[in-house]
Length: 281
Ligand code: PAF
Image (tube, rainbow, N blue to C red; front, side, top):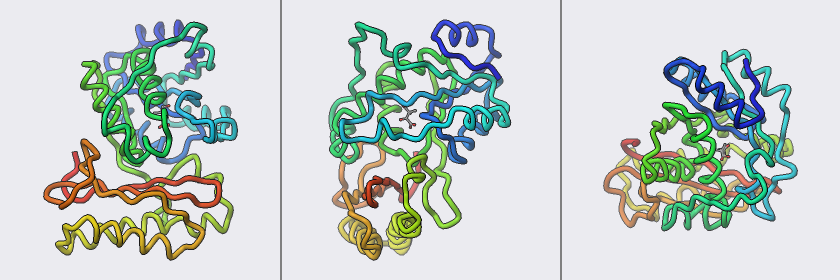
């Protein structure tokens, strides 16, 4: 497995790689969710490149950039076992050299609601670094988890709007046995918070069960999620949304598919999760 630290090394690797390359962008501190993306990429491409880069521009001043967990040696060992061909691990200076002045802004409702409202500037930083990483990796396919449903919607919009020659492949959320969605941020949870955390997905499942029983009123679905989450008093609920999965516009009635998403704070940790009602895109 090659470890590539510079753009020059990454581009040279791509030129010499097999016919099709699958790309998995990450911020490291890998868990089973990332490894599932890698396995899917391996199954569908001749070679896989993973990036590990904690991107400072997608963190706000109150976000957790400096305390974001990092473990380079462990990540590299996990990727080696998965048969990854190359890992791109640039420095901040390599990605944002002096004079860097460009940003990718996916405008409108897609980035101003939900996570965009809670974390101003987050999607601008994310879209910019993903555009750069996609250009550097030169992959045929790039793999993103459905756990960050809004990120996936923004990346799909950007790839389509900019005519990027890459297929964006959505992959299912990987969960702990008790339902908690895997996330590098779960490591922040105290043992008491970890015990309470599955209430988030339990709430989403209540909405799913109501939908399967014929309920189509978003207010009823939202309330079902809220009521289950607040059973755990440690949770401070930020939002429950029932929205169009592509535009993220809130629905006043569920006619086709709907994305039910939730964000809540558990102590110092902010958790997000979602389920799709109906056919997924
Ligand atoms: O989902 C993440 O880990 C990050 O947002 C990504 C896509 C690697 C961009 O920094």
